[in-house]
Amino acid sequence: MRFTNWIGVALFCAAGTAAAEVPNVAADIAPVRALVARVMDGVGTPDQVLPANASPHGYSMRPSEAAILEKADLVFWVGPELAPWMGKAVSELASDAVVISLLHQGGGLELQLRTGEAFAEHDHGDDDHGHDEDHHDDDRHDEHQDDHHDADHSHEGEVIDPHAWLDPENGKAWLDVIAENLAGADPENASAYRANARAGQEEIDAAIADVEALLAPVRGVPFVVFHDAYQYFETRFGISAKGSIALGDAADPGPRRVAAIRDLVRGAGVTCVFSEPQFNPKLVRTVTEGSDVGTAVIDPMGAGLAENMGFYPDLIRNIGIAMSGCLGGES
Ligand SMILES: [Zn+2]
Image: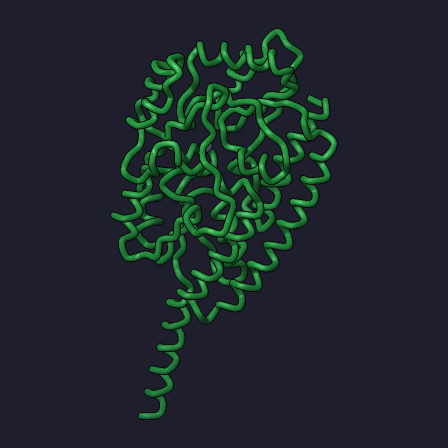
């Protein structure tokens, strides 16, 4: 009798322990979810807080998305610079979780937001979009930037550009960060996490090589982007946008802004204007009207990609394909 009881307890414990070992993991945006999913391949599946087609800069969570944070043991997110609204949600809903802001892990490429007339600054998802248009023409961006920033933000003039996942070397570094944090939370599967991270890094290296080959012949061809999200990608691959149409991330630009960019497109001999799936395509048409400038859609969030293990390298590769196609003249 005693013997059978002992077996029963042992089995119960073994099953209980095994189930508890794989942590519940939440990620903010699709590219981060994809990196976490790559590391957890064969062990578990992370959940994603933001829908793929939403702009991370300003968003209201649905109850199902809040529930993802509530049950999370670990939260991987880019950081408050990308989604200022999410900091409060994470601290309130995921108060017991290990929270990792990938932007603040160090070691990777970290860039300041670009400033100046051609780019202006992001408004970080602030609801008060009217400011962008009101203050745009007075050349005093720094002053109005002040009003927009909450306590999470760095000092004026030192605001980190949050679109850091668009440097694939950062993606590779983040795979290690993700693997080490998962290994800490779930030592049993540590070697699987680390092996997956290494395999993921090799897959990203292949995408980097592809994009380098794609962009080599079109380096120096001038282009404009919809919103200033590509600095990391540009820096990594040695290309550079002449400007961005949108002043902020979550706001549509006003007529004066569109006119200024239309002038920039003509004056700078811009060859391509790149739009994004989550933004208004009409604005791109307005900017390119009456010129033979090409357009293409680039997808920084992977809104059009299937949720498989190749998601992140495909996201990087697809930006290279869209850019090289348009800059090379097939618009
Ligand atoms: Zn953005």
